[in-house]
Image (cartoon, rainbow, N blue to C red; front, side, top):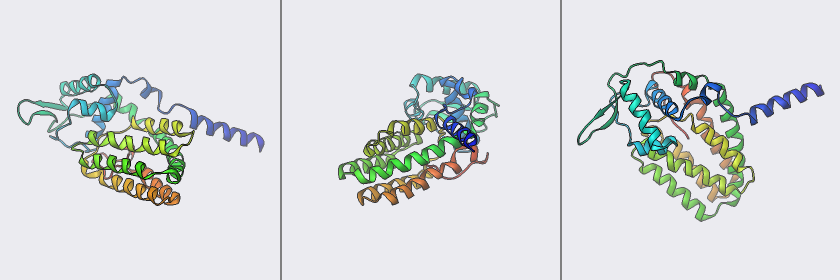
Length: 256
């Protein structure tokens, strides 16, 4: 029995502390990761044919890469016929009317990481529950007002990248509010999941904002149990929304 327990503990530690992601994904360049995430969004109908993409600097901020990386990725997708450029007023970068299926190796690397995504969601659910429990006991009105403003910034966003930036700041502020020494480990898991983020239609983001509003209300009420309940619902939605769970013709809902 002791041997089995020690083996199970060692296995659990490997899952918790191993760097997430398959070796194939780890070998991708920054440009390839941007290509893959945009291609996955198009494949799952999250970016519709003929839809306009945000400006390069917004894509870079949302996918947490440099503007040069984002520009190179978009240029390569234009060369492949997946995206098109339209000049003049109202122009910009658009998804092609009939984007070709490329069979891109970078997309295959992302698809192969289903188990890593599942493990990261498990870790985030446990760790974020502890984070919000502690934050609810320490939250000040100033903290809550700052969280309210980040939700409003997300509400005012005109595209998925403008939403992603204040949404990330929201979670980082909650981690800071918790005062827990484990908060940096939580943020490592949270940020690891970001590399799997793919763009979503703006209309699909409201449910996640409502959950953030409910979380702030729990903070104001100093109610850690409700904060944990809201967080578990919020994070659990990722099991339905991350791209491995989505049907190829699209999906509904998005929580970050």
